[in-house]
Image 1: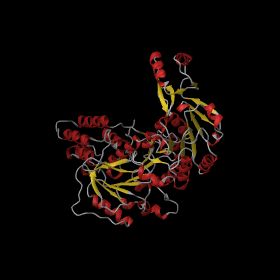
Image 2 (image 1 turned 135 degrees about the horizontal axis):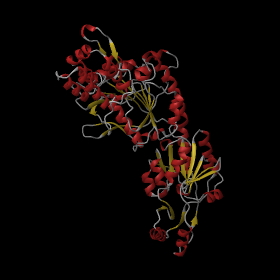
Image 3 (image 1 turned 180 degrees about the horizontal axis):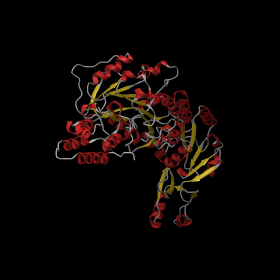
Image 4 (image 1 turned 90 degrees about the horizontal axis):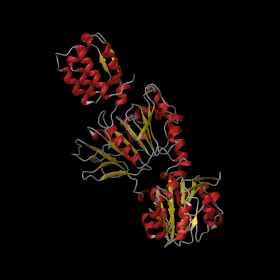
Length: 569
């Protein structure tokens, strides 16, 4: 279920002439029976609302006074999100002849044309307040408060975000929350500016428009609307003219594949960054510690400590936090079982809250090995909003590959990468002769579309390019480890990361150290296995200085590593 909450304005939207019809109330009851939440957002004062609406019990929260007051009907708890208006402000308005003043807990309301006197009073008294219009109604509120801020508070109380909400309104003061909701709807008799803002305008007006929307939600969760929601499309690449190649943030699965060191992590990090920019919550499952440098994401887990599913879920309960689950502390053989437990927990959270909006599985062939397809119930039956990263598409279960909607081939021989996917799934690949990808280019294949894959430009993250620093510093590089063997292969000491490399380098005998130094083995390893060309270039300069003693060269290389990587104590 995509939309877990319906957010509605009161006057002119839910109610006509101040009253909610029995038909509309019945629709709200059906909405709640479908498992969805209902939130009422209004400019009215709470006491006024209680006097005219006997259906407040159908709402999880009531956001009154244009966002300044949040009330929970079930607990009867009321929270003020702003300061009460001062007596001096009210007295000054009355002295200027403003009549029909309504004073709420936070809001002060009247009617046009008294907005001129209100603005004059705000200026003369030096107050930090703003004026909001609702057709002919005029409201004065503390700066920073509107329907969106009150709704955000209510949604967080429910463990939801704006991306799980569909909002419906009619007037100018509804714009703030409609712009934030994933889907904005206007009733047919809304003011022109609200209709222009909305992705959908109902056929019916106040009251009936809400009934119409509820019926659409219950019928198919507004699935037919997906193509109209363009405000949150996520760029995965850019064409040769710089135009974004986008995907929907909902109902899409992506596979990023290519050789080791080809830039898959950079492409993935860019997509994650853009998802987070749109306030989508992302959970990364990171077997190699590749994403610990993403500033938008909280990382839990280390080579010394693995986190349990409950620990991950406790972080993800906050819709504003995206999480990277580092699996360096989980043995390689244990990762598929660990992932099955984590996935079950994430699926339960998604059912309840719609989040995390996206799940990223790096080194997906370790988490979902092809053999797992032979184990009953070992595979997720549905992915949805999941991004898989792998070197070998054919090492993933065919049932998982069949769920992919977009395949992004990174690095050399993209045709080979896509053919492996096509052979594993049985999906025909149309690869036009002469198609090739140059530097900075990737290939994007929209699998469900009849056209061929497209050669496009990769969009790098706006922040520093992601580096695999944690893996190289303290993880297990496995087949890319360095081996201190020395002349005659007298040793076979494995350095599976830079921390172990530095420890062995400090204690290894002089002949072994110099043997590898003079052969250029250190710079070669830094360049080809650690993928750090700067470190490799600097080490190569040290290797080419024959006058350096063993101790001097060790110190210089160790200092280089320390300067670029945070090694465990």
